[in-house]
Image (cartoon, rainbow, N blue to C red; front, side, top):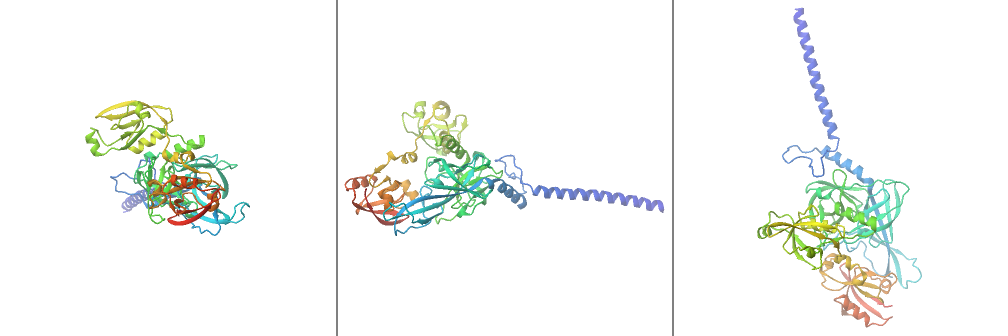
Length: 518
C-alpha cells in the first residue's frame, strides 16, 4: 500500500513538473508576443510590405500604433514652423480681403491657400502719399536637412518674404532665417538659420522605391498648429496636376492643409520620401487629396541650391509621351515601358545631334531603366550639363543606342521670371505677362485675356496705388486691355503725371484703381 502510494506520489509530482514547464513556456510565449507587439514592425526595405499578400494575419492595432509613435518621435525634431512677413502698400481706405489666394500655389479651381493675414502698419516712412503700409503674413513648414542649419521648404512659402522666422519646437526658440536659394519650377527653396549648436536633421529615403498602398505620415503646421502629424497611404505616383513640364507628384490621402507646405512626407522608417506641396480641393478644405514632391527630385534641387544658390537642369531637346498599347502594336515593342519621342524640338538639340527621331522609344538613359515619360524627364533634368551619356531606344522594333551630350535647359516658367522676357513699364513700375490658359487656371479666373502683373517696383506708381502681384488688368481708361502690349501702347500715349483708371480683376472680383503715372 505504501509502495503504491509512493508510486502515485511520484507520478503526481512528475505530472505537476511537466505542467509547470508547459505553463512557463506558454507564459513566456505571451510575454514575447506582447514584447513583439510593442516594437515597430520590422521591414527589409521601403518596398517590403508589413505582410505578404498571401498571409491572412494582419498587423495588430498595437503594432501599427507603436510604429506611428516611433516614427513621429524620430521625425518631429527635424520639422520646423516657418512664418514669413512681407511689407506691401495699399491705398488708404481700400478694403483688403484676408486669407486670399497667392499664385503660384493655386492649381486651377483646386487651390491650397496659404494662411495669410493682413495687419496695418501706419508708421509709414514719410513718403508714401496717401498709402498705408501693411504686413502680409504667411505660414508654412520646413525640414532641417543639415546640422549646420539648412532647411528645405517650398518656394511659395518664402517667395516674396521680407522676413523669415523659424520656430524650433525642440528648443522652443524662434530664429530669423535667410534665403540660400529658391527655385520656382520645382517649388522648392532652401533657407538657413544660425545656431550655436548642431541640429538634428532628416534622413532621405528613395522615393522611387515607394509603392502605392505604403503607409506614410505627413508632418507640418496646418493652420499654425505646429508639430501636427497625420497618417495615410500613398494613393498614386507620377501625378501631373497642373500640366507643368516637371511635375511628378506623389499623391497621398494623409491629411494636408494650409501650413503643411514644405513639411515632410515620411515612410515607416522615418525617411523623407516627399515634400508636401499642394492639395486639390474645391472649397479650400482638405478632402483627402494631397501631393508631395518626390524626395529624389527634391534632394537634387536642394543640393544645388545649397552648393550654388541656383538650379541648372539638363536638356535633351525632345517632347515625350507615355507608351500606349496601340503604340506597342504599331511600333513593334515588347511592352509599354519607356518614353516615346513625340517630337525633336530643335535641330541643334542634343537629341537631334545624336540622331534620335520621332517615334523612338527610350528605355534606358545613362544606365537607368526608363519605365515612363516622367522618369525620363526626371533623370534628364538631374543630369550634369556637358555630361556624355548613353541612351538606349527602340526603333522599328530593334534596340539601338546613341551617345548624347546633355546641355542646359531653359524652361518657359524660368524664362517668364526673367524681366527682359516681359513687357516693362517704367512709369507704372510693373512688369507684366499676357494671361495664358495655364496662368488663368492657376489664378482661378474664367477670363481668357488680360495683362497680369508679375512684379511691382517698391515705391513705384503701381505700388503707391495699391496694385498687387497677379492682378489682372482688363481695361485702361475704359478701353479693353487684352494683352500686355495693349497696356504698353496705352501707357506710351499717356503723359507723366496723368492719372489712369484701371479695371482690375483680383481674387475673382473686379475693382477700379486710379494710378498717377510717374
